[in-house]
Every structure is written in C-alpha cells, then in structure tokens.
Length: 473
RNA sequence: GCGCCCUUCGUCUAUCGGUUAGGACGACAGCCUUUCACGUUGUAAAGACGGGUUCGAUUCCCGUAGGGCGCGCCA
Image 1: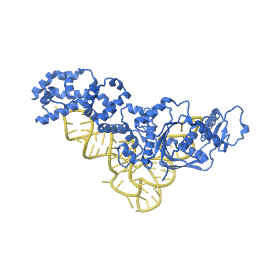
Image 2 (image 1 turned 180 degrees about the horizontal axis):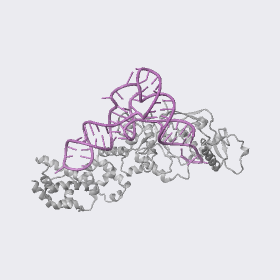
Image 3 (image 1 turned 60 degrees about the horizontal axis):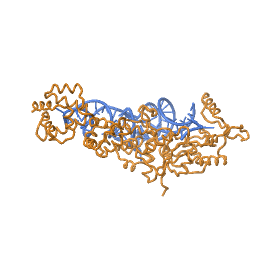
Image 4 (image 1 turned 180 degrees about the vertical axis):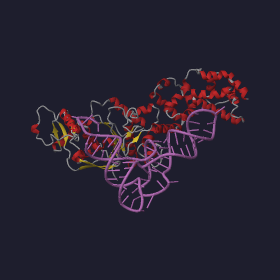
C-alpha cells in the first residue's frame, strides 16, 4: 500500500487564471480524485511586485466556477519565506550553496556577452569557488545553489518519459535573493516537500525547472515527487496562446457562456484521451483518468469544438437546471445585469416555458440570452419594413413571409409556432399549407402552446391572419 | 547560440509491427423541417521528409526539416 496521493495546483497570482492553468488544475484534481488522494492549492506569491489580491480572488473564483475544489486552505508561498530561508541557510552551511556578489548589472553584461559571442547563456560561476574574503564591501550577496557540473540529471516523468539533462547545461541558480527573499525554484521544492506532495502535475514549461529542482531535492536528501509535465495549449495558429486566442482567464469563458461541465470535458480531451470517447461526464473522466494517456505534443485550442460540446451540454441539461445556470450566468455576461433587473416570478415562468425552444439552438449561454431578448422587449414590438410590407400585402403569401421575419426577431417563437401548427395540422388532418385553422385556434386561446400569443402580438394584426385564414381555407 | 520536447485528416485524437489507418469537431452534399436549430445519412480529408531494422513499418532506431518550451535576484 503506497501513501495516498497528494497533488497540488500552484498558480502565481500575477493575473487571471488562464485556460492552460485551468487545465493543469483539472488534471491535478482529476488525478487526486481518481486515486482517492487530495489536491492542494498553493499560491506562488513570492514575487511581491506582481502578486495581487485581486489575482488570488480571480484564481479561486475561476477554480470554483470550473467545479474544482481542493483540500484545506490555500497556502501562501510568501507566508513560508522564513522556512525557505532556513533551507537556503542550511544549504549554505553544508557547502551546497554559496554567496554570489555579482550585481544585476554584472549578470546582465555576462548575458549580453554570451549572447554576442553566441555562447550558452549561463552564470559563469564567478563566485562559486572564490574565497569569501574577496567579497566586496557593502554588497549584499545573493545565495546560489552549487549545482553539479558534471554528469546528468534525470527526470522520470510519467508523461515525458525519461528526460536526461546534461548538468553542464544547468547553471548555479539563485535560491535566495540579495534582499533575503527566496526564489521560485527553492520555494517550490521546500513547499512541495513540506506539504507532502507526492505527484507534481504541471506544464512542460517547467521541465527544465524540474531538473534544477531535482538537484535541490537531492542536495537536501529529500524524496523527489512523481513528475508529470503536460503539454501546453497553443492558439489556433499553433503559436503560443495569446490574448487574441484563448489565453483568456477562465472568467472570460464564463462570460462567453460556456458551461463548466463543457469546459471540463473539452479541456480534458485536449491532450488526454480515452479511446474514441469524446463526450463524457466529469465522473466518467475521473474514473478513466490516468497520466499515461496524456499526449506529449501541444494541442491547439479549437473554439468550434468547444462550442459544439457546449451546445450539447446545453441541450442535455434539464430545463430547470439550465435556467438556474442561466440566471447565475447573467451577472457575468455583457448586458446581463440589465436583464437580471427584469427578472421576477412571471419572467421566470416565461423563461421556463421558453427553455425547451431556447436551448435547442443555443450553443452558448450568450446565444441563449440573446434569444430571450424577445421576452424582455417592450410591447408592442417594432416591426421592420420588410415585415410591414408583408403584412400590408396580406394574402396567402404573407404567411410564408412571416415565418422568416419572425425568425429574425425570435427564433424560439417560430419554433413554437411550427410545433403548434404541425400538431394542429396533424390533429385536424390539414395540410401544412392550410394554417388558418391552427392559427385561429391559437388566437382564441384554444392552443396552450407558449409563444403563440406572443407571435400574434408580434404580428399585431388579427385581420391579416383572418384574411390569410379565408384564403387558406 | 545551447539544452530538452514534439510531428497521423484543417483541428482534437485512436492505433501499444500486420487495420480498407478508426472516431469527433469543422467543411461539403442529401434527408427531415414552410424559418433557424436539432436530428440523421453520406462525401472529401492524414501517417513531415530521407535512411535504416524487420518477412512486414504510422508504430522501433538514426538523420533532416519544421514547430514548441527553457536558458531572470519572474513564476
């Protein structure tokens, strides 16, 4: 029996929770659930300049919206700085780290020179073996990790396989800044160790860090956690995800009207697969999830597929649940708050009745919201010229013209009309061309199909219908 | 420049040496429908290139090309 799995999601609060981070969190969460372990949340806020409380809120809200939860309170990495410093000092005392008196300018020059001479950009080890007595006065040193210079560091990665990195390509990284604050690579190792993390699942952009961190683990004599470096998500053009593409915060996806379950399903399929299965519940995903089935190559974000999936989830969500989700969505939607103000019991009832027609053709909640515009509109509705002309012309032709016009105004009504007409026609043995009967029935209240009265209200001209009826009959 | 990783239809992917290379999204066409959508049927669409290994390679190895990531007193 091995120890229970502990995963962690460790974002830095320097901005919104982007979609790649959301997927990383999903994988960590899914793996923890699958194995009966737990996922921890750690906020990597050691960069005091860029970390913000707003970003922390955004991350937590984003995860919550995605339906991902974690064990215990979020851990602030910055709050553990004392311990990180302690480890840095320990490394220093053991001769596994040393003080470096190079100034940032020195280092910049070093880099510039290396670049100019087309040499690898690395710290040259100036202070690695220099006698501390040579230290310039008044300069606060940074502490560098004394990384092995020969041999190689191996990362046994569940996704990437066995990755071997020559130690000569890894330089002595700073673990403690000259101002006494720890840096990322040190903090991560100390925290993951102290927090009992058994499995690290993160983006491949951390692969090189994994090597450096492995060296620190070894220097401390700590056990190296299982690693899984998952491929990154690219934009539609194959390049890095930019804001133009999908590098938006997860809250942007919420505002675009995507359902959390659709997002989970889509994100899971991006890089991970279970045979030919495309649409699966989150429970199903958890049951199937495994690290081995995660691919190694980067995947492009495809909004068309997300939309399709989202449409599927919208259609398959029970009306009442969808209505709840819709209401919850409104505050986050552009123009949604204005609608929210008009929602009372009567409106809820209307929305509920309209939902079957509404959800049939909405791929996102935004589309669904747009389709409800009719319900919120002032009566009587203004008709465009085309509609007016059609009415003016009257006659049997009018009916043909009316439907498309209605479509423009409000698809779902047309849907109701169509359904009502069809059923009436069938019930009364009428040919579909003869619509007068069912329409009259609707007008007199014989039909209970919601939307019919609204339709007539839109038309606003019972005479036209009557005329149509005469001709059609 | 150096290191690491990747490469199957336009996109996401299946395939664990032998398949007519499968599915999904998208596209196109038909059906359903007096709108749109849903649904449904079908079509087109892929192993980057070059060498090996093997009776046999998409699958294993090497090289080339292309792409990605990393190389901060950022995380």
